[in-house]
Every structure is written in C-alpha cells, then in structure tokens.
Image (tube, rainbow, N blue to C red; front, top):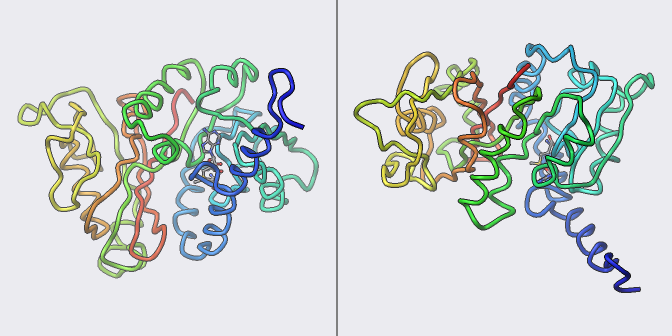
Length: 302
Ligand SMILES: C[S@@+](CC[C@H](N)C(=O)[O-])C[C@H]1O[C@@H](n2cnc3c(N)ncnc32)[C@H](O)[C@@H]1O
C-alpha cells in the first residue's frame, strides 16, 4: 500500500471517505441526512424549482450535465425525464446510488441513460466541457456552496464570475444560494404575514446602468439584516427586482425584509454568476427553523 507512481492510494481513500461524509462541507452524508429530514419543510421550494425548470425551454437538449446533483433531493424527476442521457458530476461518491433510488421513475423504462463522474465540476469545468462538447449544463445548488469549501473569498468570487465566460457558447443554468441567514419566524413560507409575497414569482436581473446616487453600491459580504454596510459593496450595477429598479443594497434589503430577517446574513459570493441582463428568479428556501436562504435560478443561451 502507499505511494505508487503518480497515485497515492491512501490519500485517494481519505478524500473519498471525507467527500462521502460531508462533501467538503457542501454535501455528503451530512447533506443527505439534513435533506431527508427536511423533505416536508422544503416541499414548496422544491415545487418552485420544478416550476422554474419545466417552464424553461430546455426540451431541445438530449443530454444533461448535472453538476452537484448529489441525490437530487430538490431536483424534479419530471424535468429529468425529458433527457436521454444524464451525466451526474459530484465529488460525493454516494451520489450515484442515492440519485438512482430517488429518481427511479426516470430510469424505469430504460430510455434515460445515466453516468456518474466523481470530479470537481467547477475547477475542472474546461475539461468537462471538452469531454462533453454538447449537452445542457445545470449547476444544481452547488455554486453558492463554494464559499464553504475555500477560505479565500476573492478567489471563490473570481472562479464563480468566470464560469459564464467558459460557458459563453453553451446552454447552461444554475440554481444557487445568494444569501442566507437567521429569520424571526419558524418558516417564512408558511407564515401568514409573509407567505403571500413569497409564493409569487420574484424576478431579479442586473444591468450595467449605474444609479447616479449609488455608484459605489457593492455586494454584502456579511451584513446585518437591517443595516447593510455600504463599505462592503462591490457591485456598481442596477438591479431590477420585480420590475422596479434599485441599487444592490436596496434590493438585498428588500429580500431580507420579505423573510423577516434578523442578525448576520451570509453572502454566498454568487451575485455575479449570471451575465448582466439575464432574467432570473429568486426562491425562498426555509432551510431549517428560523434560518432561510434566498436561491437564484436562471438559464443562459437557451
Ligand atoms: C447543497 S448540495 C446540493 C445537492 C443537490 N442539488 C440536491 O438537490 O440534493 C451540493 C452538492 O454539490 C457537491 N459539490 C460541491 N462542490 C462541488 C464541485 N466543485 N464539483 C462537483 N460537485 C460539488 C456536493 O458534494 C453536494 O453533493
């Protein structure tokens, strides 16, 4: 046992076990257990993701390259059924077994082929695209997780921003965490005061136009819900939130107040994943009691 030329089996095994346990703080058994226990709490969010996927014109694509698909706890079987080939990319070695069980209806008739590739679908994206010159790429709640894997925030932000350049000639999409943090209510989606607004489609897009009074508007790194710090912003863009133009700070504050946010919120460094002008949808995700995420979902070049 030990090192052979170019391959250290002990290191490989250690990585395999660690990724199975917690997917480098983004998945693994920890995620599977959390998701299994939270199925009821997440049902409305899962439905919103399904609606978003089903109304998007993705039918022309036969192959789906699903990055960070895990067991597909929040994925729609209906949407998956429209593809002939699903290429699941994940660092979690347990993902293919659980994915096949959870989405067994998709594979029952044998008309949908399935293949798993255990690799980093972000750092190895150029190689992945070369290996699969065609196919729709969907990042499934994975881009907003990179802030947990790597300590260097600037580097993570740069990696996430660069994805759209790598994918400029490809149809692709993503659902990912934008912001997350504590809320005052158990579940904003079932709270009488909040659920009406949150059950409607919430649209969000960024444009290059600078609002004259907020040329230094930036992304929140970690910000108090009621008092976002202007010094922490780095996005000189105008946000269109449900048809109303505002700077990024105002838009973030609106989102936070819609879920009754309190305390310190986490920025997932993913605010610039999509190209400017792309219309995306924001979906509230009551992750656990009194803790909520804002997910952003969008498609490019469809
Ligand atoms: C929050 S979970 C989302 C899982 C999945 N979308 C679902 O609905 O169950 C994030 C997943 O992304 C995987 N992951 C994290 N970073 C990755 C990367 N760079 N490349 C491939 N998979 C990654 C983790 O192993 C985990 O399975």
